[in-house]
Length: 305
Image 1 (cartoon, rainbow, N blue to C red):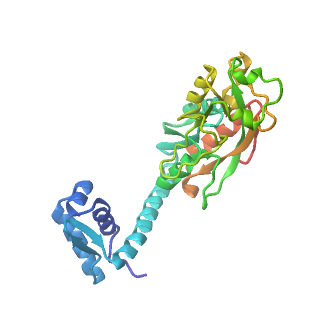
Image 2 (cartoon, rainbow, N blue to C red):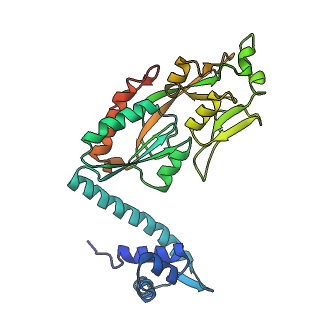
Image 3 (tube, rainbow, N blue to C red):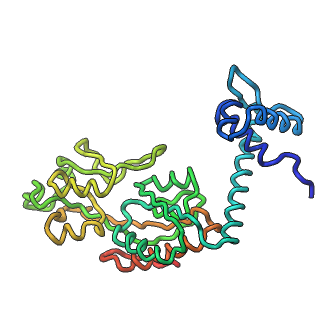
């Protein structure tokens, strides 16, 4: 087998020069001298036999050939990093850190019980928990490689299994004007009231979902914020049933009597962001989440592991 003449480090340096906009910026980012960065790129071009960069002013710009090769090299370095991570997983076993991305509509009681059960079995694995809304889970997969994503949206190229069925309920404070209605409420009447909507946490491709299309809405960043505002008597919202059980029991919230759509349900899926490189700590956490989801009242747990 022919050995490559160009090293991964040379491709990494080239990427940095392009991404940072020049040799000086790349040198600072890579903690190298500018002369070392310049030599590495010059050697790479010499080995290939043609230029990859042209200098316009103070900025380095790729040639057409350079664009093609840089694009391929990004995949090459990504695969090399993934290979090292797989080797670490096979050699060390338990992950030193576990990145967990969770849609905020995931049943909070089940999540907390699972994390509580996970901690004494974790063998020191540190959990980095990130809460997202709607397409925030997709963005997390696109921009990084989280170990586990619990989301309602599954991107192309990923295998996913349903872990729990989440139920949303239209609710308001008992003293809200909507409860003065004598008949089931239709959408036209509902749209005249203020609705609390939870903002999509994705930055690049946020979407609107779960609202009536009226301008009478307030947008908040979390389920907890929406819950507190609705309990105070301001507006109405569709909120996860598992997170409002106590408020329903003590009378702080009441289900709205709608002609249709008073309850909505959808699957949340478990996505292993690292595929076959998934470690035992991540798999244990999923098993614990599945167990706790089985205990959620009025939630339909979907066994798949």
